[in-house]
Length: 105
Image (cartoon, rainbow, N blue to C red; front, side, top):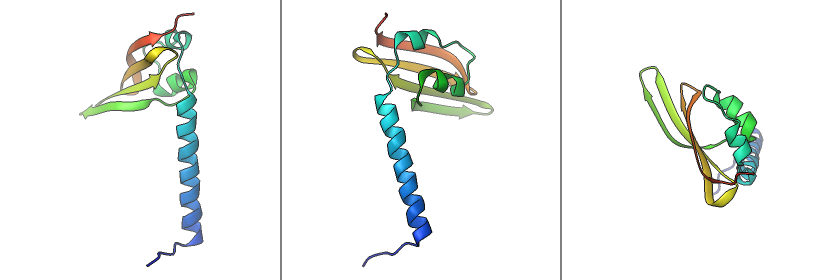
């Protein structure tokens, strides 16, 4: 048996799928270099970091206790095999940053 969806719902699903594919493709091509890593300062918001790096990171952990929200994100890097950048945010503000294998110019 085949389900028939209303045209509006079908179009909405197609648009959401296309947007997700575009976002995934952009993130796949996004690689952080050492200069961009060095430009990140504690206290920056996630939105500022995203603008500086050019793409969203992949959330690898998150925790909420009371009013404190902590999240850690990872971005692929340019450099040695497996190069990456890991950032930790507390209440949407950058608190810690770490990198592995980013090429220094």
